[in-house]
Length: 358
Ligand code: 13P
Ligand code: SF4
Image 1 (cartoon, protein in one colour):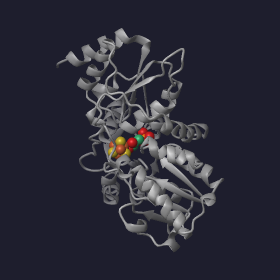
Image 2 (image 1 turned 135 degrees about the vertical axis):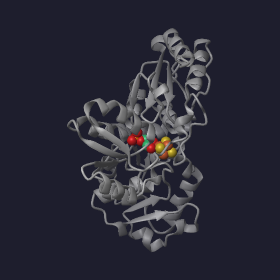
Image 3 (image 1 turned 30 degrees about the vertical axis):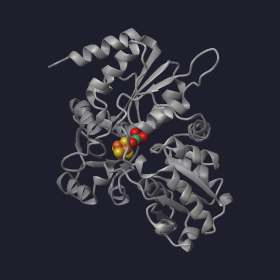
């Protein structure tokens, strides 16, 4: 095997020392995540970014995660420059985050108010997988951010302050969370930003408790209810555990759902000999399968082939080595920097999230 990249990354890391922290999301490739100082789901990584003292945060994840780290990181002061956040490949985006654009969200808000909903009864809540501008939109209107690990607590937080929620941009996480809280389906409506008036009548909007933005994860949406049926028929003893970005029909049939961190914990805490079919990104599933095979745990992907997040996959050892070696030379490449006016309200929304339990 060619260890050139490993050697280059390790050498650059050593030279940079404590000035640089490397954060890695669980969907990263093995050859990248092995260099991470902290691994986690988006909640845990945003906590790590907020707590880090390093001058440079190398985010091995996707764009919205790096933006959130920039919002939560130490700001510039007269005494000391703020933290610099680097995304090794700027093309590492998220197809779900791309499904909601700030102009569309502003139009949606106008539509809701035009339909007769009052600002005092409505709170916007956005999934972490969204742009900083959308987080700021929520923060400025009294709302907050959530991740898959604290969506329910965030819903409860919002319902303690308002009667209705506009949830952006993942309809599946929103529906799965609402359903788990006992909100009937007829009180959750889907707002389609590509249709006039969201494609919903003003009456239905007024009657809804949760208004779901019509966005989804193109990776998790590929898991289907028939995949669960197939696993149940072939391996009756197997537990099906899925990420809440999967469709409601899939989550309903599963034994448990949770963030990437929770899925890992479910596998780790299970007794020896347990088996799992997991509905989430293939790199995490394969890693768990390898890691827990010696403990007699069998782990397979819920579908037949495995779902790959192609944008997470963009962070390669080559990109990582390039970004680190530039830092050694004193060059900050691929910096992710959120505009100051956006940063303020995005930070308010993210701080509200970090104040509620996961
Ligand atoms: P987690 O916060 O559960 O890691 O999820 C992030 C994500 O993008 C899943 O697709
Ligand atoms: Fe975005 Fe889906 Fe990839 Fe997560 S798995 S980063 S939601 S495209």
